[in-house]
Image (tube, rainbow over all chains, first blue to last red; front, side):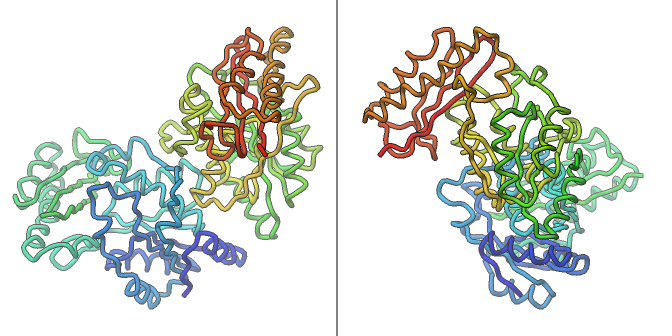
Length: 280
Length: 280
């Protein structure tokens, strides 16, 4: 397995694959790999000739008050893990190379970035779009894999990829959950035992909302209230929202492809979760 | 010569070239090709295995009050011209395909976009960076050619290309002037005979400024005043500025690589011109 730390070296490697007409699947990650990442990596390995995992804790997607410094970094373990999974290359640039002092270029998706987590994480999606653009240019994949846990992120990357004519297929894979139902996240490592018990109510609340939808309830306020009332009161909610799964526009009633999404802070840890429902 | 109107077809063509290890040189244009473009095209033809010219009048780089509708469109003549020059492909997408109704992604270079023409053309460089990103993704060139006439644009594209890890070499070629000294521009077609006589004073004024610099004058105000006083008073100047040629930062004194730049309106036509000087 190749570990590449420079965009130029990474691109040279990818050009070689393309000359042999091999397809490349990219899984962009910030490391601290868990079972959710593993599903994405399996997807990339199974459906492409070569799989690349990028590991980069991207400073531009953290707001100043967020956990950039504290974010878990487990590079050696991550490399050991992906090596056994059949990944051909890890792209792991360092922050100083990615963002030199006079760095000044940003990619932004308007509209889609402004709802849901947007107002709570100023600059976050601009940082995500910028780094994903850089990763796409270095790796030049045919397909890129993202998790539904970050559903807004996937919708934004999908739009960006179409708008900017990247010619890359964006694949979204379902949320992977722990046995207690909590959505896999590198940030789960921050939770105390008590916080973990509180955190699992996020998914229970989404399931309660889904039950209402399955029962034919279309009233958005009723669904949102049920979710809010099922979440452990120790969790400070940023939002509970029912939006169109593609446009992320708030819905007047539950119909079509809907995304029921929640974000909240469990102690100092911000967690998100969601469920997608096809309303018949 | 291939005429391609769709990003996917363009990319397929470029992938074929790359599989044969052929280098691609791109000249991005808005058509209405003149001798300035021809120099860029010659550069692309001479220094690459395959040359591509893009012809696209890009709506997102025109402010609402600007000349998007009126901009000269001479597509058939342009194609005939580049065909004789040894260009292998023309990429000519249409605006509705490039920017569907829910288009929402923009690329912006901060800092460099904010001086010189920036304040006079709100959104212009954001539109330029966005369309150049799309052209780069469709054509996947090894080198891209820009004219020094748009020196700020070239500096911005250079920075964007580095920042986003495009892996493309940006080549800037010198300004081509008509026999009367006026810098070649598609917008010169707008000028009446009288306006044309006024317009040539822009270059005469820059030369007067350059003479002072060559004579060892370092005082920026003195240089700028000389330029301002040499321009025909019928021209409404947007700015005369002496900046660092790379950072585009205003200079306190003329030293190093300097860019002496002017922008003004001759009747309804906005023209720009510049001179680069290496101060010994």
